[in-house]
Image (cartoon, rainbow, N blue to C red; front, side):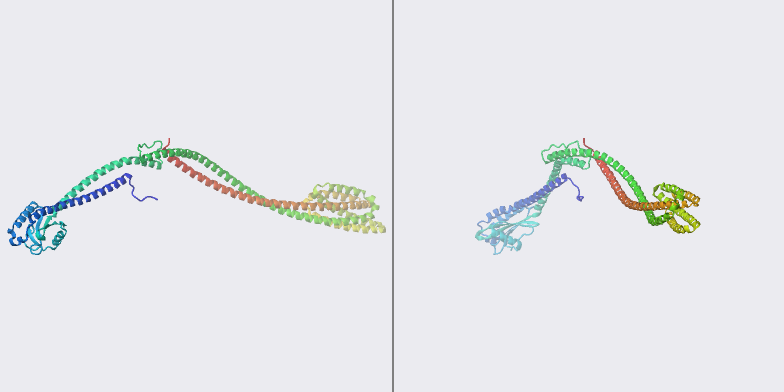
Amino acid sequence: MKNSKKRTTIRKQWIKSIMLLVAAIFIVIGISNFLLISTIIKKAATSIGPELSTIISYELEGKDLHSLVTKKEKSEIYIKLDKSLTAFADKGKDLVDNVYIVSDGLNGKWSYVIDKSKEHNAALGDEFSDSVNLDKIKKAVESNQPEVQDSTDHLSIYVPVKAEQNTNAVICIDINAKPINKAKVVLSGFIIVLMVLALLIVRFIVGRMTKRQTRSINILVNKMRDMANLEGDLTKRIDIESNDEIGDLASYTNKMLDTIQDMLKQVKMVSNHLNSTNEEFTQEFISAAEHFEGMSNSTENISERIKNQTDNLSETSNAIRQINDAVTQVAENSQLVTEQAINTSQNAKEGNQVIIQLEHHSKDISQVVDKTSNLVMGLGGKSEQINGIADTIAAIASQTNLLALNASIEAARAGEQGKGFVVVAEEVRKLAEESSKSSQEIFTLIQEVRKGIDDAAVSMKHVSQKTLEQNTFVEDAACKFNEIVKSITNVSNMVEEVSSAAEEMASNITMITSQIENLAAISEENSASTEEIAAGIEKQVGSVNTLIDMTKNLNSISEELIQKLSKLKLE
């Protein structure tokens, strides 16, 4: 808090205190001198009374005052008293205004004996009627000591005198107080002038003394002011040769300057180091902020890519789920085909028993079917096998239908002997139609892999052409039935393989779907993690920017400190 008092100096305070003390002493001395002068003048004035009373007492001693009543002014006593009072009045005419004698022995009352006053001249025997003075007169008689009454204009003295026969007389003197007061004023003025001159002399002496005493303090103040403002030369020391407290203060101040100089040297060195280090920190923080911003941008790109990957995985998972449904449907249809193939195989075996006798006529058909079977077996991949099997089933069904038709024609030619064969051929034809329907269903489900089956269809057409060429021979029918049995058996096995492969594919697709869903979940977690990392990086960027601002602020503070310290001479 700022001090609201007006600034002053120790020198002024010392001068003020000393001058107030000296002035108080002079005032006390002046008052004492005034009282002393008044007392001396008063005593000098009152000393007149005892001197005059001695003379009057000598004149009145042993005298009968009653003779004054009879002889009055012609009395010897009166003449002597008049002579003495006249001489006294003439001697102190400038000082004494009234002088008279009163007595209580003339007529039983206090009366004038003689009066040499300037203001009035009472006759012998006149009654004294001044009650104020009368009280003082009676008091002086009772105490047998002079009484003094001090008023503004007069100094009244009452001196008692013993006469004969216990007669009391009192000499009354009124001294003019104006000369006395004038003397008091003159003496007082002279004393005041002396005191003023003395005060001026004392002021000069005190000023010189305090200036000499405070010179060292001013040196200390100037040094401290330079230190407070971080200015000046700290290599110089205060040179004060004094054995008092000021000397001790100068000595301790020099020690403090040594300590402060060493400390400021360290501060300056640390400030320079701090300034250079702070600049390096600022550059490093700026570089770190740029790296963090680059990392933030990269993280945002990674997050965007992971998000896109997650979306793609979701789409892939949906597509694989659809494929899984399709494969499941294929497996179910394959199971139906397997059942139909088993039934067809059973019927074909029965028909084979009928046409065994025609077996030697179907060797060429067996060779063609073997070639077709080898072609179907050569298809790569499980999907190609399925297509080949479907084409084979379709071809076999078609060929079986033709064989059945040919068998019916041949049986019709055979007459009664071929009736049983006609029944078998009809059953074979029905089974062929059912196999054709099943193969058509399989063909519909696996259209996407039709290319490999087309190649097999070409071969099967070749087989069909070969079969048509051999339909005139009954033994071809037997061979074809044998091939039908084999083909149906193969179809049954292949359909089982297809079903197993489809189930395995469904299981694998389910596993793949699960893995893709897990991968999608992991991608979502990675996306969330990258977002958290990006947020953390942004937070770190903010922290680094804050540190940059702090280092810049610290740099400005250190530069300001260095600038202030540069004003000091430390070495």
